[in-house]
Structures are given as structure tokens and as C-alpha cells.
Length: 68
Image 1 (cartoon, rainbow, N blue to C red):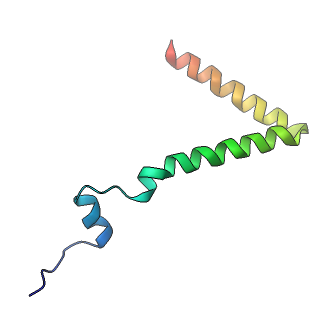
Image 2: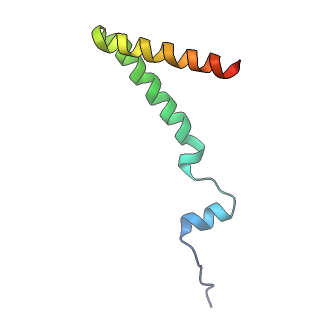
Image 3: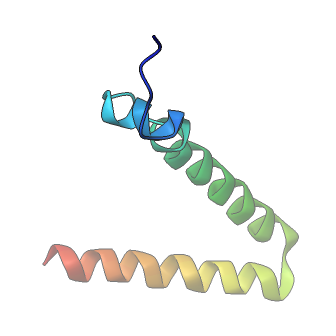
């Protein structure tokens, strides 16, 4: 007789130690998308370029503050 599983297949895989796609590749995909969006805004010029420069400057400043 077939053993009845108590969890869905995704949970069974997680319990078995296999990582889901999102965990393994999701961070890389999100990082690439963010870089492309930033590049697009910087390339566009005007107010969007200024906004992106301000965001990048603020982010770098926050990282420097955390490292001190």
C-alpha cells in the first residue's frame, strides 16, 4: 500500500533539504532586475536620473554609517 503523505510536495522537498527555486536563484534575479532598472533610470536623464543619483548617494551613506 502507498504511504500517505501529510504535506504538499513543496513542503516535503523543503523537509528533505532541497531548496526551492526562489531561495537559490531569486536573490540573483532580483539583483539583476534592480541593476537594470537603476541603469535605465540613470540613462533616461532628467528628474528620474536625479532621483536615482539621490537614492544611490543615500544608500552608500547608510552603508558607510552602518560600517562605522
